[in-house]
Image (tube, rainbow, N blue to C red; front, side):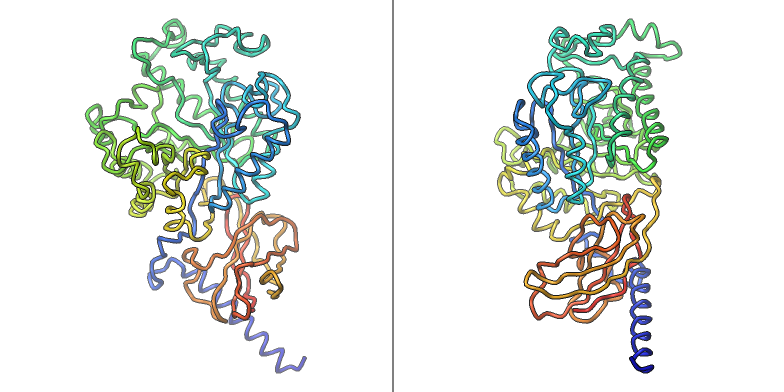
Amino acid sequence: MTLRRIGLVATVVALAGSLLSSAAASANTPDCPAPNPDVPARQLRAEWIASVVNIDWPSRPGLPAAEQQAELVRWLDEAVDRRLNTVMLQVRPTADAFWPSPFEPWSEWLTGTQGQDPGYDPLAFAVSEAHRRNLELHAWFNPYRVAMHADPSRLRPDHPARVHPDWILPYGGKLYYNPGIPEVRRFAEDAILDAVRRYDVDAVHFDDYFYPYPVAGQQFEDEATYQTYGAGFATKADWRRNNVDLLVSELAARITALKPWVKFGISPFAVWRNKATDPTGSDTTAGVQTYDDLGADTRKWVREQWIDYIVPQVYWNIGFPPADYAKIVDWWSREVTGTDVHLYVGQANYKVGVSTQSPAWMDPNELSSHLTFNRSYPQVRGDVFFSAKDVRTNRLSHMDILAERHYTRPALVPVLPQRGGVAPLRPLLVDARPGPDGVTVRWLQDRRRSTEFALYRFDGWTLPRCGFADAAHLVATGRSEGLLRTFTDSTAQPGQRYTYVLTTLDRLHNQSPPSLPAWR
C-alpha cells in the first residue's frame, strides 16, 4: 500500500471515528431533533408468564419434561417475535418451587403432585433459553401465599407449613403464611434468595399479593400475632404495613449484598390510596387501597428507593370513572419523579375483547391508546402485559395493532444506574459481507463485559450525526458473548448500499461507544 493510500485510509478512519463520537455525544443535545417517540431507543417490553393454576405455563400439570420445555420455548419465541425484551416467569407461586429448592417442595403445577421431581430443572432451563434469545428473565415470587385451598392436610407432610402449623392462616378459601411472624419473613427471604444465589436471573419480581385482598364477612386472624409482636404500633394496620416494609427492605438489601446486579421490582395493585382517604392519593374511588387493605405502602417503597422498578397494575381503561387509567399513570409518574425507581405500567390484555368487561375493552385500539398516552410521560419507561396467553390469543388483533404503532423496531432495556455495570469497550466491526441470506457483519468485542449487541443500519454511505437518538436505525439486538461474533441482517435489500455501526452492552445494558462503520 502506498503512503498516499495509507494516509487516505487513516483520514477516513479518523473522520469516521470523529463522526461517530459526535453522533453518540450529540444524540440528546438541543441541536438534534427530538427522538422519534414511535421508536424509543430504550423501553421495557415484557409479559407475565403465570404458573399458578397453570394460567400460562405449563399448560397443564403432568406434562412430560420435553413437552413442558417445548411449551416454554414457544412462549419465549413468541415474546421475541412480538419484539418484547423481558419475561416475568412465576417460579414460586404457592410456597413451592420451580427449581430443586432445599426450602420448599417442587410445585404441584409442574407434575400435579406437590414435591414430585419434574425430571429437569425448569428455572435453569428458563434462564438459559431466555438469555439465548436475549430476553431478560425476572423470576416472579409470591412471598406469602401457601395454597389455593385452605386444607393443610393436602400439603406434603414435610412442607414447611405442615412442619410449622403456627406459621399459616386460612383466609378466603386459601392458606397464607402469617406476615407478622419474624421467622416467616426470614424464611420467605431465604427461599427466594436460594434462587438468586444459584441462578443467573436478571431480577426478583413480586406481584400484588401481600396481606390478602379483603373478603366480605371474614377476618384475617392475626390478632394473637399482633399482641405478641406489635408493641410500639398504634394500630394493627400500622404494624402490618411495617411487616411488609421489613420484607421489602430486607430482601432488597440482601439481594444487593448477594448479587449487586440483580434488580428488584414489584407490581402492586395500582391504587395506593384514594384522594378521599388521603389528599395526596390518586383521584380515584377504587374499592381497594393497597395502603389500607393489603398492608402495602407502595408509595413508601418508591420514596425509600428499596425497589428498582414499580409496575402498577393499571387494569382499567382511559376514562373509567372509579379508576381512570390516565389519572393513575399521571399520579405514579409524579411519585417516581426525583427517584431512581423506574415506572413501567401493567396492562390488562386479559380484558380486551371480553364482553363482561367495560365496553371500552371492546375497542381493539384501547391498549394501543394506553401506550400513546404514556408518551406524554417520560417517567413511563415501558409496559408489562398480563398475561402471556392473552398476548398469544390476541383478541380483536389488539397486539397486532399495538405492534404496528409502537413496536416497529427493537428496543434496548432501560439502564438502572444504581445497579452499576460498566459499558464495554468500543467493538471492532471487521466487515459487512453480502451473501444469499443477507449481509453478514463480523465484529470483535470486549469479551469480559459484552453480553448483548445492537446493530444499526443507515441507508447509503452516510452516517447521520443524530442517528443514535432513537431506534429508527436499530436493525437487531441479540445475545453476544465471546470475542469474535457474527450476525446476518436478513432484511438487507440486495444491491442496496448501507452503512453499519455496532455497539455492545453489558448485562445491565450499559452501551459501548459505537464501532467504526462498515460499508456495504
